[in-house]
Length: 400
Image (cartoon, rainbow, N blue to C red; front, side):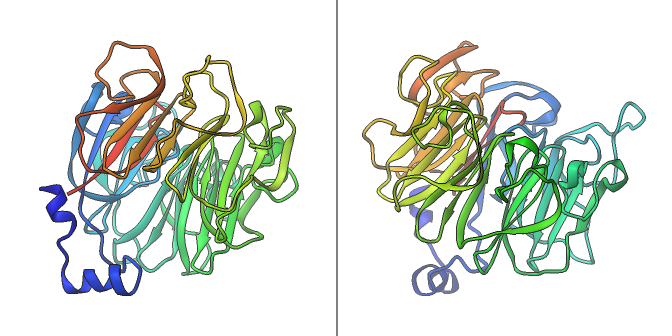
């Protein structure tokens, strides 16, 4: 059973987990499940069928980090190979098959397709999708990008149509990258020394956090010692420092900076939220969700579709973090502009917000609005949740 296999380790795996305190090179095999919109093949079932309850994507998978509004999906298998599906606009799938307009026969992939070998080998540690762009970290910890490259989004010190790439191209020469997350033509990445680097679109939202509105076409360091980060839609980003403090920057639409202030002014550099015990954060469009080290879940910002989970009127935004219920067993959370997914430590999966195209996985009539967490009962042992496919496709990893 999944519970039995969870505690089955080889000697090396036990050492990595129990002695070294890391996961080492071991990636536990996982099932990957999808539901919601099938448009552009988001559900990876070799069709464009919409699913209102979870369906398995064949194979054993370990990692993915989709930007919730992206039409590109990408994930890494347990053998460290990288696979992509969804829309191929501007070469965003990295298959060396550009699509721009109606001239190419390759518009989308409705089932996972492997990224060709790059530099003689083809193993990857992490992948993140953005808006028509993708950035991934190879197993040698080098950083690679491909796709549209709007406003310097690929970090290649170039931008615009002349800079688009339809296959992976290395970003700089550094080989100490550890994590990456993507957004609307911009990316954030961490190095092994806990430094954070940002690049791409900035403009009036000041979403890069560099105290200006200038685009960056190559990675630029954001001061601080950082543990994790998450990019929102167009307006805001969030990150957690190594001391457990939570920081946000960008537009303060509907109070999403969490400062108990509803005015729409921008924060052009990271601004701290109260507390020093934050462990995970995810950002939607004009809303955010975070989990504390005590297992409590907190949300704030825009509540147009009830996706804050407080069972309050849909227009009742929150300008500071507000706890969801009283439970203290939350484990992971993913938030989009229209819905939220979360898991608990017992492996149960919960969903709320706008049930559009089946993205809540509840097999219910749609569209409907669910204003507080409801359990998605068909999946046991869920460890991770993600949202992609233009906010209408949901994904869950199951521990085998």
